[in-house]
Image (tube, rainbow, N blue to C red; front, side):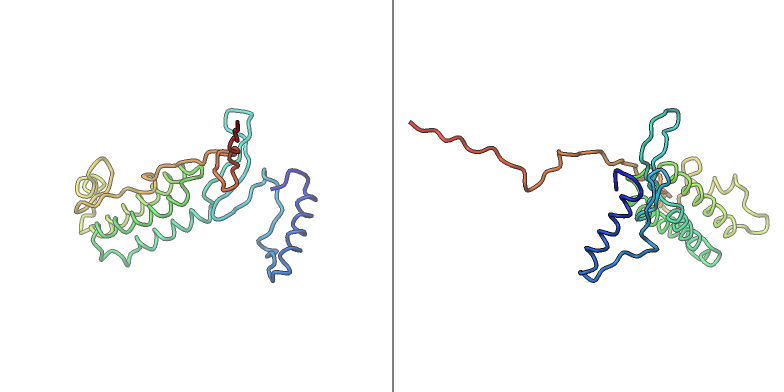
Length: 198
C-alpha cells in the first residue's frame, strides 16, 4: 500500500525485489501488479476494492469473496450433487454439503459476504432439488408439493434422518474492527518505579 503516485509504488517494487534477490527469492511478475485501490485486486481469494457506499458520497474499501472463490465452491457442490452420486442417502449428502458449506464461509466471514453466502445457498438448494427429484422421480415424477412434504421440515429447509441442511448463511459475517494502538505488543513501556528517600 502506497500513499502516492503509481511511480512511487513501482519504485518500491524494485526496492523489494532488490532486498529479496540476495535471499534467493524473486517476485513473480505474473502475480505482482501495481493497481489503484479503486480498480481493485484479488488477494488470497478476496476481491479488495474501494467503492462508493450506496446512497452516500463516502468511499470505503470492501473485501468480498472473489468470483473464482465462489466458482470453486459451486464446482464442489456440482460434483457432490451430480448424477453419479444418486446412490447416496439424502442424509449423507446433506451432511457432506454442510461440512463444505461450513469451512468455506468460515474463511470468508470477515468480508462483505452476506449476499454471496445467500447466493451460494440458493445455488445449493436448486442443485439439491434437482438431485432429489431425479432420484425419486418414479413414473409420475416428484412434484414440488411432494418434495416439500417428504424432504423438508420447516418451510423449504431440507432435512433427512435428523440431518438438516444449514448452508453458508448459517455462518455469521463478522467484520474486522480497527484496533490501532490498542493491540498489545511486547514493547509497551511500563512507567518507571518512583524512588523515594529520606
